[in-house]
Amino acid sequence: MELNQLRAFVEIAKVGQLTRAADRLHLSQPALSGQLKALEEALGISLFERSSTGMALTAGGRSLLGEAEKILAAIRELKQAAQHLQGRPAGRLSLGTVLDPATLRLGDFLARAIENYPLIDIELHQVFSGAALAGVREGTLDASFFFGTVDAREVHAEPLRKLTYRVAVPPDWDLGKRGTDWNAVAAQPWILAPETSSHRELAMDLFAARGLSPVQVIEADSESVILNLIESGVGVSIAREELALASQQEGRIAIWPGAELATTLWFIQAAQRAEDPLLQAVRSVLREVWRKEAVTA
Image 1 (cartoon, rainbow, N blue to C red):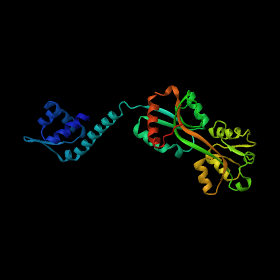
Image 2 (cartoon, one colour):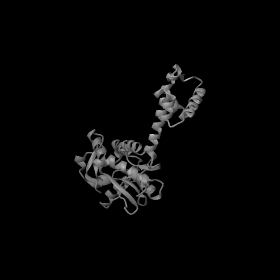
Image 3 (cartoon, helix red, strand yellow):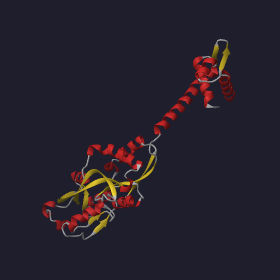
Image 4 (cartoon, one colour):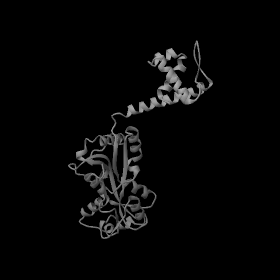
């Protein structure tokens, strides 16, 4: 069974005459008759009753006409979809993620990317910020979300939003008695992300500005773990302001008032790949997702 045979069947059914159908399909009458005969042999039933006045569908023909029309409609839709995809960027991208999906607006980003660029396959890799930067530099990641300091000579960095970090302490810490003495805060165990993270870098900048270093460090590999350890009274750390304020409101931590740390959330890629069509495509999606939060960094 061939598509041209189905087209012959549907067209003859529409006009009810072999001659008119042949004209509409730009075929000779013998050629059209041959296609119809071949289809009837393939299906094993007669599709039309022939008479001097024209061609009338048999009961079997009426039953199969709708199915034939569905097949031809599906073929048209397939061609239209292929035309729609012509010229669109296609390939695979490996993207690094830091922080939680909600902060990065990953759901919205991926939904728009799939809709706008269905030929781009995106792989997500959760990494620490330092590893994200190294991955982009070394080419193991095509691009990544990142927060912290970037060198514009090495990477193309698109600012997404400002991030503020606060010093979070256990809930039973009596700030009224201890006040804002940094030495008292610094003497506590500090819960920090690994050395390849911007989280630790920010915290160490806080110490360096006061000529100190942490006495004891407990390493944790995610924001949620760090926050949980603070809430449990294990030690102190820095936490993103929105997380710290929410936890403070529920009475699970206290916020030490002596410091605020500001940084930027970026989307980064290697500077030499600024014209890469795949990366240009995902950056355009990123701008759609973040357009209401224009950042000047």
